[in-house]
Amino acid sequence: MANDSGFRWRTVAEVGLVSAVIYFLLGTPGLPSNLIFSSSSTDKTVSTSQVKVESLVYPEKNIECKSHNYDIHVLSTAPLIIYIDGFLSNDESEHLIDMSQANWQTSTVFNSGVETTDSTVRKSEKALIPRDHTVQCIEQRALAIQGWPRETFIERLWTQRYNETGHYAHHYDWATASRTSRRVSTFMVYVHADCTGGGTNFPRVSMPRDARWCEFVECGGDGDGDGGEEGVTFKARKGAAVFWRNFDEEGRGYRETIHAGLPVTSGTKIGLNIWSWFQAGHSVD
Ligand SMILES: *[C@@H]1O[C@H](CO)[C@@H](O)[C@H](O)[C@H]1NC(C)=O
Image (cartoon, rainbow, N blue to C red; front, side):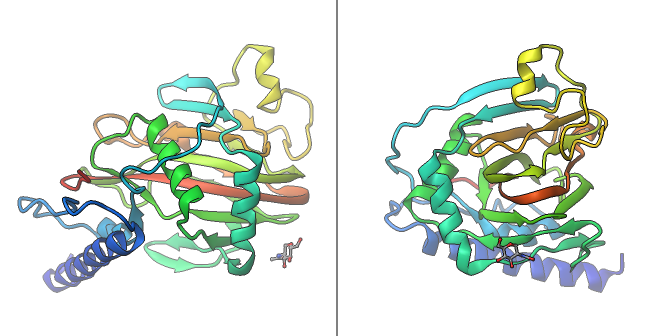
């Protein structure tokens, strides 16, 4: 890479980082004054991934959230993949759908770092979700399930609407990862699932043996939209979520996490992505 292009990226990255700090301050009212969100001065390698930092948030520190029950089923431990039934309450799902209504826009994909639309890869609409109390409690729940990992933030939440034929081809959620900065985990949440098809397929993950899993994953047969896919296909069930870690402890991406949103064959699916982002040297205290 030429020197000057490296320099340009660095500038963009720094602008992104500064926006992050500003956003962070604006988006989290009532925070105590000892908030720390500062870059480590030894961090010399500012990578393009820091452009993503502009959308990182953290729930209000002492936020009080209603208690909420969900059921956890571990499908795999390496990588960690968990099915969470009842991750969202009905009210939370309806609230997310209401807030999305005015904001739907065509989803994009990144191709060699360039944002484009390509309906052969991804056909859906997305909506940015305002961060009210309910939404911050959902962010908080996502962090709590993971054990409040250090130096880890939530990317602003977006819902995704898939009408009939809507889909997302096999991909990784790795984004632009580095040793100090990466999308550590994903929650794929089904906010609305009045549809056939639309399951989430992991071709490199083995089917669980116990038949009780058939409530949550497509079992044999040519289920709607299953299409005899390889591996495991999680059913789109309202309120449920699939959680997985994208990287091992050394920061290597798990190849098993490649996944697709299978085509919706009728009706509409609305999904919610909750991505946790590790940013070394940044913390909230
Ligand atoms: C998807 O369906 C909704 C209503 O069911 C409609 O308002 C919207 O325009 C549709 N989106 C696309 C891209 O066709």
